Image 1 (cartoon, rainbow, N blue to C red):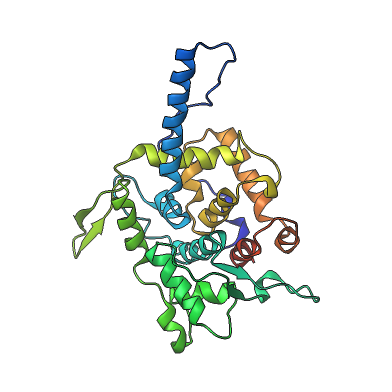
Image 2 (image 1 turned 135 degrees about the horizontal axis):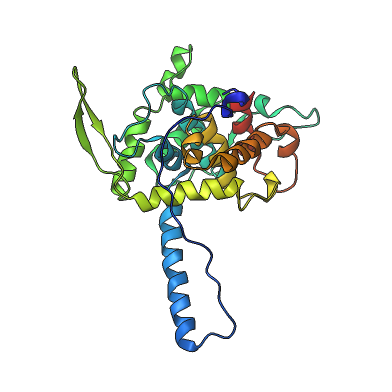
Length: 291
């Protein structure tokens, strides 16, 4: 994905929602304390429900048209973007890691993915990808794995690594989680299964979270950002769906959000990955899309 791809604004529409931080006064009564604690518990419940979405599901949800229930027919980036999400998800869950750079300080794209822990994740797609990594010797680079998992390789021996029907399987996961529903639509020559949005609150919270990360909660330091949010911004951009989260913004906020996204995209990713406390695999996936 070209780094210049964040400059053109489109006309997609996504609902936004309100809701600000809960403030607890030191002088509240016991009843008020209880009420506030209950409100915080409700927010925690919503947060826990939201965090049950994988990175892949969040990217797909940003890309789906709310009423139509399918991604843009013109989007040819989301397939590889979702595979990148799978690799990062495995990395953040401690199942795979990037091999060490060594004395020669090899670049992120030249280093291989290594198995770290082969215990199941409980997610069928993640476990399928994990099984492929486990069975592959010698190991492969991030870029190769994205091609293999997408089925975009000229090597016929690697076609068995392709993860098939990823979008449909992720949509079914979101149906099971109550976010989407399933319908059949007729497109003149064929019928297509679609997955319109049913839980608008979930998508509104996701969109608001992305917006806040580059606006009201911007920290101007990639390493102080939540790793999942940073990954979501990079991979949503790589999948050509990030702008869907920014479309509802006014012009000034839109320009500021895009400016900050560009700042992230133009980071020296090799240098960033060498800083303490980083997940190098995550940065390697970023590098594979911004090269």
